[in-house]
Length: 335
Image: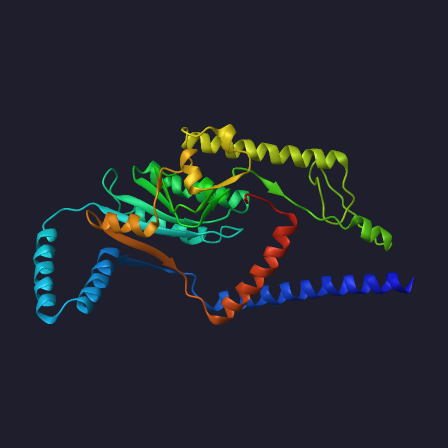
Protein backbone atom coordinates (compact mmCIF):
# COMPACT_ATOMS: atom_id res chain seq x y z
CA UNK A 1 0.00 0.00 0.00
CA UNK A 2 2.76 2.43 1.00
CA UNK A 3 4.68 1.64 -2.21
CA UNK A 4 1.60 2.47 -4.27
CA UNK A 5 1.08 5.76 -2.45
CA UNK A 6 4.75 6.65 -2.93
CA UNK A 7 4.59 5.90 -6.66
CA UNK A 8 1.45 8.02 -7.00
CA UNK A 9 3.03 10.89 -5.04
CA UNK A 10 6.09 10.86 -7.30
CA UNK A 11 3.91 10.82 -10.39
CA UNK A 12 1.79 13.68 -9.06
CA UNK A 13 4.90 15.70 -8.20
CA UNK A 14 6.23 15.35 -11.75
CA UNK A 15 2.91 16.46 -13.24
CA UNK A 16 2.67 19.47 -10.93
CA UNK A 17 6.28 20.46 -11.69
CA UNK A 18 5.62 20.30 -15.43
CA UNK A 19 2.46 22.39 -15.11
CA UNK A 20 4.22 24.97 -12.91
CA UNK A 21 7.07 25.35 -15.41
CA UNK A 22 4.60 25.71 -18.28
CA UNK A 23 2.59 28.35 -16.39
CA UNK A 24 5.76 30.31 -15.57
CA UNK A 25 6.88 30.27 -19.20
CA UNK A 26 3.47 31.45 -20.41
CA UNK A 27 3.37 34.28 -17.87
CA UNK A 28 6.86 35.44 -18.86
CA UNK A 29 5.97 35.42 -22.55
CA UNK A 30 2.71 37.27 -21.95
CA UNK A 31 4.45 39.96 -19.88
CA UNK A 32 7.13 40.57 -22.47
CA UNK A 33 4.71 40.63 -25.39
CA UNK A 34 2.65 43.35 -23.67
CA UNK A 35 5.76 45.52 -23.45
CA UNK A 36 7.06 44.92 -26.98
CA UNK A 37 5.72 46.18 -30.26
CA UNK A 38 4.85 43.24 -32.55
CA UNK A 39 6.36 45.03 -35.54
CA UNK A 40 9.45 43.40 -37.00
CA UNK A 41 11.86 44.67 -39.61
CA UNK A 42 13.06 43.50 -42.99
CA UNK A 43 16.78 43.24 -43.68
CA UNK A 44 18.20 43.15 -47.20
CA UNK A 45 21.83 42.20 -47.81
CA UNK A 46 23.62 42.37 -51.15
CA UNK A 47 25.37 39.02 -51.50
CA UNK A 48 27.53 40.19 -54.41
CA UNK A 49 29.11 42.83 -52.18
CA UNK A 50 29.87 40.25 -49.52
CA UNK A 51 31.70 38.06 -52.03
CA UNK A 52 33.55 41.11 -53.40
CA UNK A 53 34.69 42.07 -49.90
CA UNK A 54 35.95 38.55 -49.23
CA UNK A 55 37.78 38.47 -52.56
CA UNK A 56 39.42 41.83 -51.85
CA UNK A 57 40.55 40.73 -48.40
CA UNK A 58 42.16 37.60 -49.80
CA UNK A 59 43.89 39.47 -52.63
CA UNK A 60 45.25 42.06 -50.17
CA UNK A 61 46.93 39.21 -48.30
CA UNK A 62 48.18 37.36 -51.36
CA UNK A 63 49.43 40.18 -53.60
CA UNK A 64 52.24 42.68 -53.14
CA UNK A 65 51.47 46.41 -52.94
CA UNK A 66 51.81 47.19 -56.67
CA UNK A 67 50.12 44.01 -57.80
CA UNK A 68 47.24 44.61 -55.40
CA UNK A 69 46.73 48.15 -56.69
CA UNK A 70 46.79 46.86 -60.26
CA UNK A 71 44.17 44.27 -59.32
CA UNK A 72 42.03 46.97 -57.67
CA UNK A 73 42.12 49.09 -60.84
CA UNK A 74 41.03 46.09 -62.91
CA UNK A 75 38.18 45.45 -60.49
CA UNK A 76 37.01 49.06 -60.70
CA UNK A 77 36.94 48.87 -64.51
CA UNK A 78 34.95 45.65 -64.31
CA UNK A 79 32.51 47.24 -61.84
CA UNK A 80 31.90 50.14 -64.23
CA UNK A 81 31.20 47.71 -67.06
CA UNK A 82 28.83 45.68 -64.88
CA UNK A 83 27.03 48.84 -63.77
CA UNK A 84 25.78 49.33 -67.31
CA UNK A 85 24.30 45.84 -67.53
CA UNK A 86 20.71 45.14 -66.58
CA UNK A 87 21.07 42.07 -64.39
CA UNK A 88 18.18 39.96 -63.20
CA UNK A 89 17.77 39.65 -59.45
CA UNK A 90 17.93 36.59 -57.21
CA UNK A 91 16.24 36.80 -53.80
CA UNK A 92 17.60 34.38 -51.20
CA UNK A 93 15.43 33.15 -48.30
CA UNK A 94 16.32 30.78 -45.46
CA UNK A 95 14.16 28.29 -43.59
CA UNK A 96 15.50 26.26 -40.66
CA UNK A 97 12.66 24.00 -39.62
CA UNK A 98 11.77 22.51 -36.26
CA UNK A 99 8.89 20.28 -35.23
CA UNK A 100 6.37 23.12 -35.32
CA UNK A 101 7.88 24.89 -38.37
CA UNK A 102 8.39 27.98 -36.21
CA UNK A 103 10.34 29.75 -38.98
CA UNK A 104 7.07 29.90 -40.95
CA UNK A 105 6.14 33.22 -39.28
CA UNK A 106 9.25 34.84 -40.77
CA UNK A 107 8.89 33.09 -44.13
CA UNK A 108 5.39 34.45 -44.66
CA UNK A 109 6.54 38.03 -44.09
CA UNK A 110 9.57 37.60 -46.36
CA UNK A 111 7.53 36.14 -49.20
CA UNK A 112 4.88 38.85 -48.94
CA UNK A 113 7.55 41.56 -49.06
CA UNK A 114 9.35 39.88 -51.95
CA UNK A 115 6.18 39.55 -54.02
CA UNK A 116 5.59 43.28 -53.73
CA UNK A 117 8.73 44.05 -55.76
CA UNK A 118 9.71 40.94 -57.75
CA UNK A 119 9.16 40.83 -61.51
CA UNK A 120 7.55 37.69 -62.89
CA UNK A 121 9.56 35.89 -65.56
CA UNK A 122 12.72 37.83 -64.69
CA UNK A 123 13.55 37.62 -60.99
CA UNK A 124 14.12 34.31 -59.22
CA UNK A 125 14.04 32.98 -55.65
CA UNK A 126 16.45 30.63 -53.89
CA UNK A 127 15.39 29.03 -50.60
CA UNK A 128 18.12 27.55 -48.37
CA UNK A 129 16.14 24.84 -46.60
CA UNK A 130 17.02 22.69 -43.59
CA UNK A 131 14.33 20.62 -41.91
CA UNK A 132 13.78 17.04 -40.72
CA UNK A 133 10.02 17.63 -40.83
CA UNK A 134 7.38 18.13 -38.18
CA UNK A 135 3.67 18.75 -37.71
CA UNK A 136 1.47 18.13 -40.72
CA UNK A 137 -0.58 21.33 -40.77
CA UNK A 138 2.43 23.59 -40.15
CA UNK A 139 4.51 22.15 -43.00
CA UNK A 140 1.49 22.05 -45.27
CA UNK A 141 1.13 25.81 -44.78
CA UNK A 142 4.87 26.35 -45.28
CA UNK A 143 4.70 24.51 -48.62
CA UNK A 144 1.67 26.60 -49.59
CA UNK A 145 3.65 29.78 -48.88
CA UNK A 146 6.32 28.64 -51.32
CA UNK A 147 3.65 27.87 -53.89
CA UNK A 148 2.71 31.57 -53.79
CA UNK A 149 6.06 32.25 -55.49
CA UNK A 150 5.31 29.78 -58.27
CA UNK A 151 1.83 31.25 -58.75
CA UNK A 152 3.40 34.71 -59.13
CA UNK A 153 5.55 33.48 -62.02
CA UNK A 154 8.85 33.37 -60.11
CA UNK A 155 11.28 30.51 -60.61
CA UNK A 156 12.03 28.80 -57.29
CA UNK A 157 15.18 26.84 -56.46
CA UNK A 158 15.56 25.02 -53.14
CA UNK A 159 19.07 24.31 -51.80
CA UNK A 160 19.54 21.61 -49.16
CA UNK A 161 22.90 21.25 -47.41
CA UNK A 162 21.99 18.85 -44.60
CA UNK A 163 18.40 17.60 -44.50
CA UNK A 164 15.02 18.05 -46.19
CA UNK A 165 12.96 15.10 -45.04
CA UNK A 166 9.22 14.48 -44.69
CA UNK A 167 7.65 17.92 -44.17
CA UNK A 168 10.96 19.43 -45.24
CA UNK A 169 10.85 17.51 -48.50
CA UNK A 170 7.21 18.49 -48.92
CA UNK A 171 8.41 22.10 -49.01
CA UNK A 172 11.28 21.28 -51.38
CA UNK A 173 8.97 19.48 -53.80
CA UNK A 174 7.27 22.78 -54.66
CA UNK A 175 10.47 24.08 -56.29
CA UNK A 176 11.26 24.16 -60.00
CA UNK A 177 14.76 22.91 -59.19
CA UNK A 178 16.21 21.15 -56.12
CA UNK A 179 19.93 21.39 -55.38
CA UNK A 180 21.35 19.20 -52.61
CA UNK A 181 24.78 18.59 -51.12
CA UNK A 182 25.91 15.00 -51.77
CA UNK A 183 25.35 13.76 -48.21
CA UNK A 184 22.16 15.71 -47.49
CA UNK A 185 19.29 13.55 -46.20
CA UNK A 186 16.36 13.60 -48.62
CA UNK A 187 12.92 12.00 -48.79
CA UNK A 188 11.10 10.20 -45.98
CA UNK A 189 7.72 10.59 -47.67
CA UNK A 190 5.73 9.09 -44.86
CA UNK A 191 3.75 9.89 -41.72
CA UNK A 192 4.38 8.78 -38.14
CA UNK A 193 2.57 9.21 -34.84
CA UNK A 194 3.32 7.91 -31.38
CA UNK A 195 1.35 8.19 -28.17
CA UNK A 196 2.12 6.72 -24.74
CA UNK A 197 -0.86 5.53 -22.72
CA UNK A 198 -0.90 5.64 -18.91
CA UNK A 199 -4.28 4.01 -18.46
CA UNK A 200 -3.03 0.74 -16.94
CA UNK A 201 -0.70 2.60 -14.57
CA UNK A 202 -3.53 4.85 -13.38
CA UNK A 203 -5.91 1.91 -13.10
CA UNK A 204 -3.35 0.04 -10.97
CA UNK A 205 -3.27 2.95 -8.56
CA UNK A 206 -7.06 3.40 -8.63
CA UNK A 207 -7.02 6.72 -10.46
CA UNK A 208 -10.10 7.26 -12.64
CA UNK A 209 -10.04 9.30 -15.85
CA UNK A 210 -13.33 10.43 -17.38
CA UNK A 211 -13.48 11.47 -21.01
CA UNK A 212 -16.77 12.60 -22.53
CA UNK A 213 -17.12 13.29 -26.26
CA UNK A 214 -19.86 14.14 -28.73
CA UNK A 215 -19.12 12.43 -32.02
CA UNK A 216 -17.96 8.87 -32.54
CA UNK A 217 -14.39 9.87 -33.43
CA UNK A 218 -13.90 13.10 -31.50
CA UNK A 219 -11.10 11.22 -29.72
CA UNK A 220 -9.52 8.06 -31.06
CA UNK A 221 -6.37 7.41 -29.00
CA UNK A 222 -5.74 9.25 -25.73
CA UNK A 223 -2.90 9.67 -23.27
CA UNK A 224 -4.75 8.79 -20.07
CA UNK A 225 -7.96 7.00 -21.02
CA UNK A 226 -8.56 3.43 -22.13
CA UNK A 227 -7.94 3.02 -25.87
CA UNK A 228 -10.11 0.72 -27.96
CA UNK A 229 -9.52 -1.30 -31.11
CA UNK A 230 -12.07 0.87 -32.91
CA UNK A 231 -10.11 3.96 -31.89
CA UNK A 232 -6.83 2.43 -33.03
CA UNK A 233 -8.34 1.50 -36.36
CA UNK A 234 -9.65 5.02 -36.94
CA UNK A 235 -6.30 6.52 -35.92
CA UNK A 236 -4.46 4.35 -38.46
CA UNK A 237 -7.03 5.24 -41.09
CA UNK A 238 -6.33 8.93 -40.48
CA UNK A 239 -2.58 8.31 -40.85
CA UNK A 240 -3.12 6.54 -44.16
CA UNK A 241 -5.32 9.37 -45.40
CA UNK A 242 -2.60 11.89 -44.51
CA UNK A 243 -0.01 9.76 -46.32
CA UNK A 244 -2.17 9.72 -49.45
CA UNK A 245 -2.43 13.51 -49.36
CA UNK A 246 1.35 13.76 -48.99
CA UNK A 247 1.93 11.46 -51.97
CA UNK A 248 -0.58 13.34 -54.10
CA UNK A 249 1.15 16.60 -53.27
CA UNK A 250 4.54 15.25 -54.38
CA UNK A 251 3.05 13.82 -57.57
CA UNK A 252 1.48 17.20 -58.36
CA UNK A 253 4.74 19.12 -58.01
CA UNK A 254 7.32 16.46 -59.03
CA UNK A 255 5.61 14.13 -61.50
CA UNK A 256 9.02 12.78 -62.58
CA UNK A 257 9.34 10.65 -59.42
CA UNK A 258 8.06 7.09 -59.10
CA UNK A 259 5.90 7.81 -56.08
CA UNK A 260 5.36 4.17 -55.09
CA UNK A 261 9.12 3.63 -55.04
CA UNK A 262 9.94 6.67 -52.91
CA UNK A 263 6.86 7.01 -50.65
CA UNK A 264 7.86 4.19 -48.29
CA UNK A 265 8.99 6.46 -45.46
CA UNK A 266 12.64 5.80 -46.31
CA UNK A 267 15.21 8.56 -46.66
CA UNK A 268 18.27 8.69 -48.89
CA UNK A 269 21.50 10.62 -49.24
CA UNK A 270 21.34 13.11 -52.08
CA UNK A 271 23.62 11.03 -54.31
CA UNK A 272 20.99 8.30 -54.17
CA UNK A 273 18.09 10.75 -54.29
CA UNK A 274 19.41 12.12 -57.59
CA UNK A 275 18.97 8.72 -59.22
CA UNK A 276 15.44 8.57 -57.79
CA UNK A 277 14.74 12.06 -59.22
CA UNK A 278 13.97 13.45 -55.79
CA UNK A 279 16.59 16.14 -56.47
CA UNK A 280 17.90 17.68 -59.69
CA UNK A 281 21.51 18.63 -58.96
CA UNK A 282 24.32 17.86 -56.51
CA UNK A 283 25.96 20.99 -55.11
CA UNK A 284 26.21 22.98 -51.89
CA UNK A 285 24.23 26.18 -51.44
CA UNK A 286 27.53 28.09 -51.26
CA UNK A 287 28.68 26.99 -54.70
CA UNK A 288 25.22 27.54 -56.18
CA UNK A 289 24.95 31.10 -54.87
CA UNK A 290 28.52 31.95 -55.85
CA UNK A 291 27.79 30.87 -59.41
CA UNK A 292 24.62 32.97 -59.50
CA UNK A 293 26.51 36.10 -58.42
CA UNK A 294 28.45 36.10 -61.70
CA UNK A 295 25.38 36.97 -63.76
CA UNK A 296 22.79 38.21 -61.25
CA UNK A 297 22.27 40.69 -58.46
CA UNK A 298 21.76 38.47 -55.43
CA UNK A 299 20.01 39.68 -52.27
CA UNK A 300 19.37 37.91 -48.97
CA UNK A 301 16.07 38.76 -47.25
CA UNK A 302 15.52 38.31 -43.50
CA UNK A 303 12.51 39.30 -41.41
CA UNK A 304 13.45 39.81 -37.75
CA UNK A 305 11.39 40.46 -34.65
CA UNK A 306 13.02 42.26 -31.70
CA UNK A 307 13.30 39.91 -28.72
CA UNK A 308 14.21 40.85 -25.16
CA UNK A 309 16.31 38.49 -23.06
CA UNK A 310 13.30 37.52 -20.92
CA UNK A 311 11.37 36.54 -24.01
CA UNK A 312 14.27 34.47 -25.31
CA UNK A 313 14.47 32.66 -21.97
CA UNK A 314 10.72 32.11 -21.87
CA UNK A 315 10.73 30.90 -25.48
CA UNK A 316 13.44 28.36 -24.69
CA UNK A 317 11.47 27.00 -21.72
CA UNK A 318 8.29 26.88 -23.77
CA UNK A 319 10.13 25.16 -26.63
CA UNK A 320 11.36 22.39 -24.33
CA UNK A 321 7.90 21.82 -22.89
CA UNK A 322 6.29 21.93 -26.32
CA UNK A 323 8.77 19.41 -27.64
CA UNK A 324 7.89 17.01 -24.82
CA UNK A 325 4.15 17.34 -25.44
CA UNK A 326 4.50 17.10 -29.23
CA UNK A 327 6.71 14.02 -29.00
CA UNK A 328 4.02 12.37 -26.91
CA UNK A 329 0.99 13.16 -28.99
CA UNK A 330 1.42 14.75 -32.41
CA UNK A 331 1.04 13.42 -35.92
CA UNK A 332 4.00 14.65 -37.90
CA UNK A 333 6.33 14.26 -40.86
CA UNK A 334 9.72 12.96 -39.66
CA UNK A 335 12.35 10.65 -41.16
